[in-house]
Image 1 (cartoon, each protein chain N blue to C red):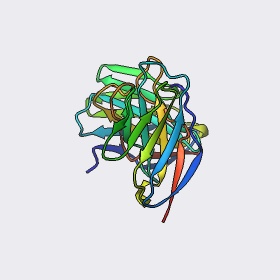
Image 2: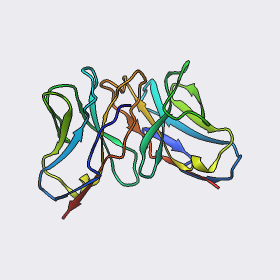
Image 3: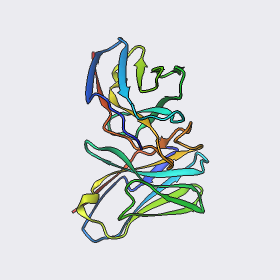
Image 4: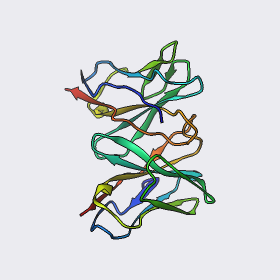
Length: 110
Length: 115
């Protein structure tokens, strides 16, 4: 899998929006951008994915830059339960499956 | 009950021993995956399978083997465990190609310690 760049950690306050950035400058035109999160002592869980257009679901929104070299995961109103490691991934290459980098450790303050 | 179940959840073994980690799923997905997680390194793909007759190597397959006994079962084996295989192992499933729009569903993990 190709490499993405994310901040090691971010901190936010409960009930405020959170913007998690990701750079993926080597992404190709057909690579989807995926976001997963891993809560403490659990396996990762899917958050959202997109190709070109911005995407929304019940968990979050994904804003993709026009040149697709970066994206931002938006949690509209953070709760304590959103404290987790967030992984931004794009799958370059021929193999299936996703390889998760170090991700961003999101800390939510009450 | 969990949709993706891993056994054992914790295992301590000695160098040179053969270890098998098992994964079963009730989601009816054809695609199954084994990942390894090391502190500070994220998750890396070991093997994946698209159906019972299909096995593919991932990023770090050396020292591991897998068996897809049925659609619902995918086992990971360490033929001769070594200390640097100490890690948290995750099984996952998907209904579609993950590199496109498929969503991965993970088990709760199997923590393996090799002494």
